[in-house]
Every structure is written in structure tokens, then in C-alpha cells.
Length: 163
Image 1 (cartoon, rainbow, N blue to C red):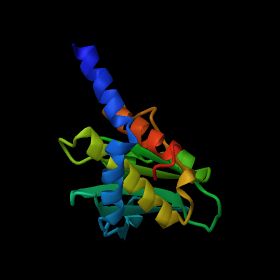
Image 2 (image 1 turned 30 degrees about the vertical axis):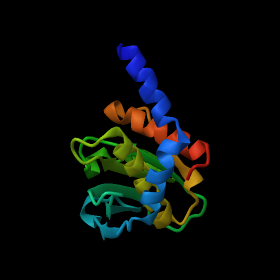
Image 3 (image 1 turned 90 degrees about the vertical axis):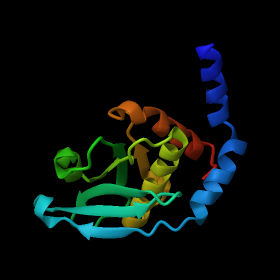
């Protein structure tokens, strides 16, 4: 019985007709992005920004974006969920090597479909901050833990060109 439910759920989340209205709602909902510098938590030669924005349903989303301070083009962005958004979780060696590291946490008790939309929302916000195409965002599933499914579905949506 459980495998039948899992198969039904899997088909449900892979159906473009399921995602179309949700993605349209995501596109229409104002994200109200606010950037707050966090120089006290940065390191020499880097910037740390706190991103505050709204999800498609009005929930507040929080992320940290760490990047090199000097101007660059064609940067890569790695997006990864964490249980707690804090400067200690930043991958400073990767930032020093030129990667933009974005860490975010899902609001508590978030449904999977909302988590997927949150991933897409934070990725789009990071792209707008860095002025790059969203294809530059790597969704890091290695350390995702419980958010692994949301990242996989968001990656599938992007790969199929639904966003």
C-alpha cells in the first residue's frame, strides 16, 4: 500500500499540470526582497548579506549569501538548505575560491510543494542579487538531509524548462 501511495505521489509531483498553477502563483506573488549587510560576520575580502523575502504564500524566508567582495563576472551560486541560517555554516574556503554560497532554512512544518517553491524563490533572489542567469545556480543535494526531495523536484522543474 505504501509503495502505491509513493508511486502516486511521485507521479503527482512530476506532472506539469500540477506545477503550472503553482509556478504562475509564484511568479505573480511579490517577493519583497530586502538585503541586509552583515559585515560583523564576514571575512576579509568577502561580503555576507542577509536576504529576507516572502514566499509565494506570504511566509517569510531567510537566507545568507556569502561572496567575494571584488567585482567578478560569471560567478557560480551554490544554494543549500540548512536547519539554521548562521554565518558559521558558510563554506568560506569555497567563497574564497569564487563561489557564491547561499544558505537558507525552510519555515517550520512546510509542505513539500511549498519547499520546492521556496527553493525556486530563493534561487531567483540570489540570481537577481548576483546579476546572473538562474542556470548558474547549483542546488546542493549532498547536505540537504530532509530537504533532498524538494531540491530534486526543483531541479527537475528547472531542467524541464517549466520556470
